[in-house]
Image 1 (cartoon, helix red, strand yellow):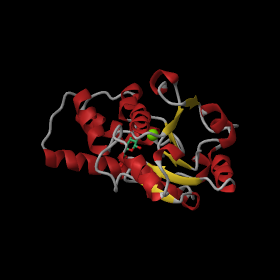
Image 2 (tube, rainbow, N blue to C red):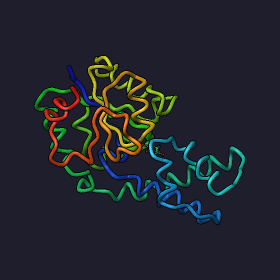
Image 3 (cartoon, rainbow, N blue to C red):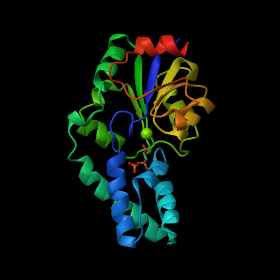
Image 4 (tube, rainbow, N blue to C red):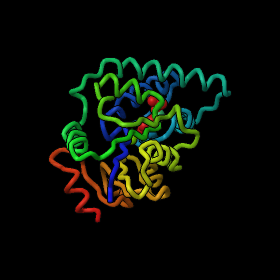
Length: 216
Ligand code: BG6
Ligand code: MG
């Protein structure tokens, strides 16, 4: 029986991928190589430093650790400029209704995100009140596909993994859910999320009740 839901943030609750893209693209432009939107798909669900490594590999560039830390810091400043301008109407369609349904049904709610900016984003979007617990990139040492973030989320809700449903838009996130023994819902395409228990385009018009029926 599902007693809790664990949500990824970027790409599930809000489309921040476009801001990550613009901020990484600024660095690529400065370093003189092309970084496309399709390249950006490879950074979804991936930690900040790992994203930088992938980006530099695309541009065939190598730098020492100190320079890379400076690049990541500058990228984050640029990213936060976009984040601080976000408003609650950027919350993806149907998300608030879904969270309210969970609250009404006394289903516990956790955030399980690789982002170190998760609390800033939830605050900016006025979403903190919905979450019983928030596990983010500041609290995990192993990133998805390792299930650490979801396991910590379930523990914090006092639930077993099999009692929780994970919502994810990244392939690494679905893999993390499966290896942690969680049921999962993929938000996006069957091409990369095919291993999820259920796949949907978003929360618009969908209810928790309906999903639970479909995954059992
Ligand atoms: C994930 C995003 O949620 O967080 C990744 O999908 C991002 O694209 C990662 O790199 C880390 O985010 P942040 O905010 O800590 O740089
Ligand atoms: Mg995501």
